[in-house]
Amino acid sequence: MNAATREKPFSLAKSRRTIQWLVVIGTIVLGLRHIMPGEASRGGSFDSFCAFGGIETLLPYLFSGHTLKSTNLLNFSVLLGTLGVSLVAGRAFCGWLCPLGAMQDFITDWTRNISGEARHIRGKESKSLLPLRLPASIDRPLRYAKYLVLALVLFASLYAAFPPLREFCPVRAFFGLKMTTLLWLTLVVFLAGSTLVERFWCKYFCPLGATLAIFNKISPVRLVADSHRCNNCGRCDIECSMGIEDVPGKLSDPECIRCLECLETCTRDNALALRVLKT
Amino acid sequence: MKIHPRYYPAIIIAAYVVFLLLGILLGFGPERGGEGHGRGALMQLACLTLESLA
Ligand code: SF4
Ligand code: SF4
Ligand code: SF4
Image 1 (spheres, rainbow over the protein chains, first blue to last red):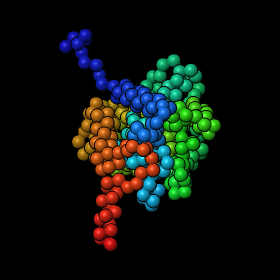
Image 2 (tube, helix red, strand yellow):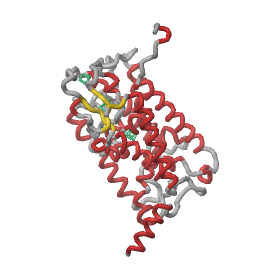
Image 3 (cartoon, protein in one colour):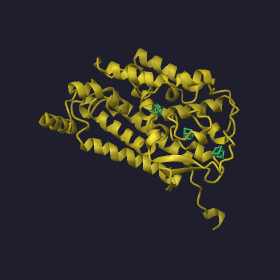
Image 4 (tube, each protein chain N blue to C red):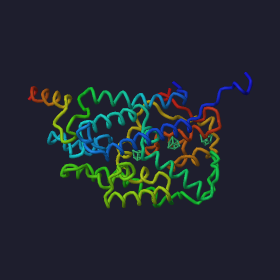
């Protein structure tokens, strides 16, 4: 086969970016639909397409038989889709299909570009000033905040008329196109946070990520490391947007978003592999 | 069993679509009126089963 006809090697990272852009464009379309009149009578408001809306409205629905205002039954199907992905492949929704996760990845790319890294070399420590990695003494305890947010939202949902996170939701702030003062504030905090720390919202505050974290332990499709082939070069750690240290030893960590950037980065054949169970 | 990473995007998108459609088929679909709906088909079934057991 000559060079002109040789098949291009498959790039996971490029497929991921393509899917993320498609998800973001789809969410922008939902946002545009949201500012047109009468959307609720045409299948539900912006909120009703949100997986986390399904969690926010679950307890009220079970106890009273009614969903919260601005949500409807579709939220449960969107949630089921998200849980389905997680049941099969852990937090792959976060790594591939979440519009907010995608925006944070894009912000990181742009931030790196404008803060000193013209072109990122995979597996090499970035030369850019931003984003920062918080010291472990702050990073580790802060990671539990998302579980607290989840518990607070579930509790508040029992007494709320609207989904409790609605006025602080970065998805609405980014894509909803109907801004309030609180949503502007949310947007500013989200943008500043994501510029300073990679996947800031996912690491510390996202209650949907907190819900999906458990699935990394049980999903059949998983990443597996071969300790005989891995030479502990640390390239995968550098590329992990969730800041997991010692990636080969922590492949079912609740923080892993199954983005497979580590797999893409590893240069040792089969040191990391995607498997069904550990077979 | 090893999976080629090439199939990974298809696996997760398929899982999402299958479970989303399952939810819609179970009655958790977009309904006219937009919000504040009563129980869906599955929940009705679960409630009826519980009531008949009680
Ligand atoms: S943690 Fe939350 S915001 Fe981040 S990708 Fe997952 S669902 Fe999206
Ligand atoms: S899994 Fe690959 S990239 Fe990661 S430490 Fe081992 S050899 Fe290096
Ligand atoms: S461990 Fe690998 S798959 Fe998990 S978040 Fe880090 S880079 Fe992505």
